[in-house]
Length: 138
Image (cartoon, rainbow, N blue to C red; front, side, top):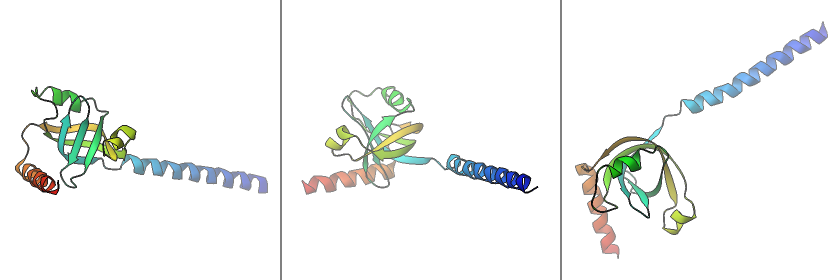
């Protein structure tokens, strides 16, 4: 009898442990994606994104395979022409190449939400103000 009770308790403990591990995965799966809004530019040597809210500049890795394609379909005459984008992604620490360029973080793009040549007025004025401030620092 005692041996059977021990087996039942061990089985219940194992089930509880397994169920507890599954809860962590469910919480991770329910984690809301981060949407970033700002200016993206693309060229032969760099792909960068400037966040509208923070002003921080990021290196870009396009795991969605949609961002670079959509940018190239806009048919710009010159590389690095900025466009307004909304992207879903995650941030990581940049590799050596990006750090050498002065960019410490990288955004891995998982989904392109929006891309447009038309930069919204709030974004445009915020960036033109930053550009003026940066030019007076130099």
